[in-house]
Length: 502
Ligand SMILES: *Cc1c(COP(=O)(O)O)cnc(C)c1O
Image (tube, protein in one colour):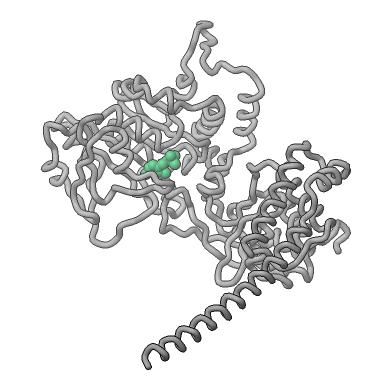
């Protein structure tokens, strides 16, 4: 009885499995057929290369054409095999135009200038500080000609590349000596490595920051072979915290600008001057990583008060480091200023050779520093400073002017108007501070904001803006006057408007 029942159950199960397998087999077969059909439709590599080589519109070496064709076809084959291909075939003409587009893209430089409409003045992702024409002329000269990079024209003997800017940096900051390295991260690394290797560096817990791009103060201290001693609490650190942490092993008291974040509320930090007194009493050195580091006090333009480099040097801090391309408005560089004997020790560190700056940095940095010999010149001629300090009224006028131009050009394709907005300093400086500004608002009539934003990024000169509350904005603070004429041409191209207007 039980045996019979089991036998029936087993037969039923078998037939059901067989049915399923059969079904699955059929769908697999259909799928294979569809895939084979798509695979057969893929164009022949050699034939395509031949066509493209003979196409007068295609200007590329054969190996580029070959690579582009091969990669595109391989990619399509893979997506067919993995079942991800959309179930439609391209005609040969369509393939050829895809290849042409890819070849065109491959032949364009990867490094491109962009138009910054984000309103973030020191935009790390978009190249931080923009240089003036005077300064970029210096770059061209440094590149196109021989120079006295390491040649002393007075003695006719070998000279030092640093001597070309050291005096200028000292004059502007009030420091005894200076050294320039690749960037501020390098400046911090080489300074701590020189002053605190195998010794202890004391830092407040409120200043153990991550700057971005994986630059964390504790990691840099570890990398330089120093031992980090954290003191205080996240929000409050007192002089006695440093005092109690000082031991036989201590070499350095370090202050770090918190740059990209703020601790607000019940807070306290030890001022540079107090730390210097404590260090001197204990025969220790002090260092301050200022991050942005400005030579000009921006509080007169309504910015929150930040200590200038001169003030920190004046307070007696032994070594001060800051960036060349943040608030200074120059090229990427790390500027180290301080006591002559200490800068001398840093110069002799073998790391210095690895972190040294090239002639382009030297040429452009000198040009920018010379503007600072007269602060009014600096504010007028250094693009970063000019963008930061231009008034909202001036920006409104600019926005109106640009909006009129664009309205005329784009007509019904895109509504153009202006609106107040706020800009940011960027580069980790004054993160919570918003500067009143004006923006061009663009409302394309026949596309979504996301596809508009993408099209803007794909223009020959990409335009980068902001989407805010369902509006696309271009903050005029970071647009350069000379880009206005390019903007209407680029937008006309995006909307397919010809030279005649439509
Ligand atoms: C930005 C910053 C750095 C790194 O400077 P780079 O010039 O980008 O290398 C280091 N420390 C602080 C406090 C900073 O703000």
